[in-house]
Image (cartoon, protein in one colour):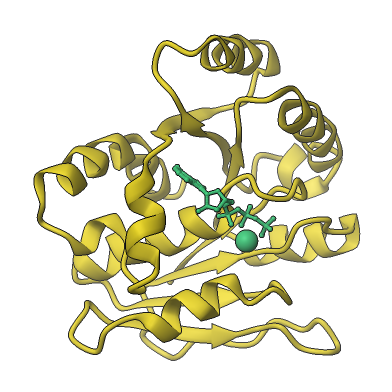
Length: 212
Ligand SMILES: Nc1ncnc2c1ncn2[C@@H]1O[C@H](COP(=O)(O)OP(=O)(O)OP(=O)(O)O)[C@@H](O)[C@H]1O
Ligand SMILES: [Mg+2]
């Protein structure tokens, strides 16, 4: 089983959208997929509840519990995606890093998001597993708008950050529209959805890269 944790303590960076669409990518590729929600907001569980019965199956895991323990994924799960909450304490981040095989960190093109992410990455790099390169992690630029000055700034920021850049996802209304039906872009075969799927390729390649 491969576990992908999507995290950034900065609220609203796109953790849930990325976790849910990633799970939809795996499920539609025929992988036995589970999606765990560790966020008391239950965003991902809400999305899963809306998911139609005939959509590619994704097992819902409610990991929001009082003592903060993680649950278990069903046996034979091939891909486990974990959505996390905003405002995570470092102790919790440490536990999530232990759990993860791969970590995705979404960041939005904005001063506030970039500042918060810089701080988070500094703290993340202090963790032993990260320092020893035992946990691949990469930044996903999210809600990118082509030609926008903020996007160019985000690109320059990433170069300075010296962090693995695993791709850019555009700001697209379709994510929100289909979330109401519990669907991700990989559940659709429309031209528009397929265009968006292309932008996911580098993210999927990073996640699917064989372990060292
Ligand atoms: N690529 C995108 N294109 C358009 N809208 C997006 C995109 N990514 C995220 N959004 C929207 O931005 C908002 C925040 O996204 P999301 O809820 O996934 O962030 P989050 O990091 O999970 O937030 P929280 O920290 O509250 O859990 C939502 O309204 C979501 O639909
Ligand atoms: Mg969320």
